[in-house]
Amino acid sequence: MDVTRVDLASIQGQEANQKSGNVDSTFSTYLGDAIGKVNNLEKQADDLTNKFASGEDVDIHNVMIAAEKANIAMQLTVQIQNKLVEAYNELMRMQI
Image 1 (cartoon, rainbow, N blue to C red):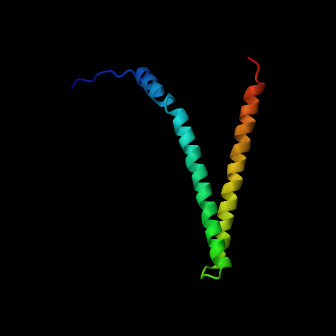
Image 2 (cartoon, rainbow, N blue to C red):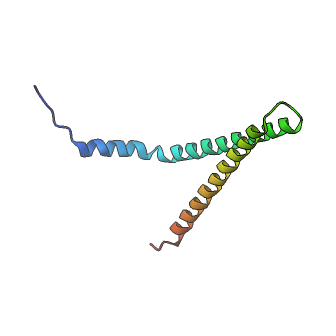
Image 3 (cartoon, rainbow, N blue to C red):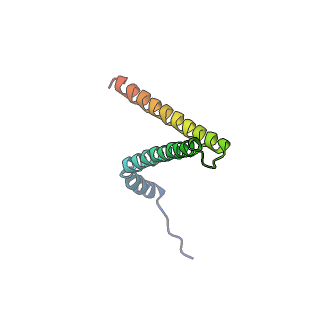
């Protein structure tokens, strides 16, 4: 049985080169998707609130749960923004 040697360093280097080109697009896609999900949660909460206010058959606990989900998602988004700004400011303070 012939077993050929595989050079792990060259394989890792090729994978790193392939992945580095996609880092920016992947990160921006991830952020865009996350912001879209937060927006959808906000829209769902607003929709349920409007239905409840107009007298439609909507349970109050569903309205409150949707509103709290949207609130938590927005708080998380703001915290991520704060961390990104903090990291950017830290990079700008570095002396080269």
